[in-house]
Length: 447
Ligand SMILES: [Zn+2]
Image (tube, rainbow, N blue to C red; front, side, top):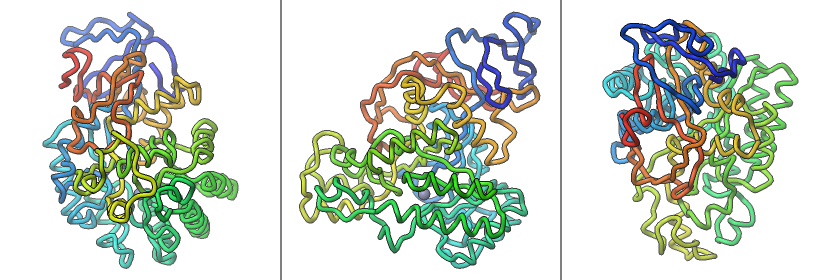
């Protein structure tokens, strides 16, 4: 049993009743319950349910990429009990009716729980704030224009204050688009070899510095989405020293891959922010270990192959390296291709790799993937404390498995981790006492 909220790390029995954690006790000390189901979980880690503060479920609007039911099943099979669904759907989640639709569809679907993220501005256009109170009443638990930065500093200040008054945070996608030009590859050696224009780290760090100054001005807590640049870590440390409450997340692709992955994976390694240099990755790993980074977020971004423009390249992603430099039509296709990778079904495997490599401890991993994201979203879960909702993930840290995208529960396959062999997997996911994913008692097919 690993519970960072109580620093509990011991072999124990867990008793769940009526959707809540009833007790944690030394082995064989909980009296037998007449109608209880007993599960022997020898060799497994029992952790508070994993929570992903940043996913794109594409619903409403893009069923060819993902739907809420498929996304929530993908989440459950990756060990997640809750996911925060970003607002860049069609229509945008900037109106209570959209939030209500998402929550209703999630309730009917099963799988992980959906936590709605409201847009900050109407239509994500950066011009007019949504009705924060109405969105919160409808069930939104965070505010973000993710995918688009909030360019107007005055508007951003107002948004931060409104969210703060309601007890929620704004999650910021930090990008100065005048500097990034919306490019999908790091400005560096690989971009030069491919003949592509790059997205420099300063486009992230300069905007981050500005936004933290604004947050400091209003003393409003803020959350920073998917940081990728080493400079961003120092900026966040500096803001904390000034007393700002700032949390931040990093995505598994940014702590695992560097910009060279684009050569093998083409547009399957294209995301915003882009994969960075090896040096950036090394600093991100330091930040995960030393506490600068608060949580892991997949930024699960499903896309069909048409949106990824894969037909413009000579080989399917991952099969052979891209031509260097790219031909003109290939370079144009790369720039046109949608940003993002799926992540819900590989995140835990990639985080466990850090544990096996000794970068982080199991306790720290659970803090990064369960406790801290639950706190960010104001959820009661994230701990195994008696009385908490029975949102639980069971991880077999020794189970080896291979990422086979054609078997993903997600509707999309856009991953640069196809074929990776992982050690460790979620084998049981429990949401409010109900088993929503089961690879333990019913075999690999799952519930
Ligand atoms: Zn983003």
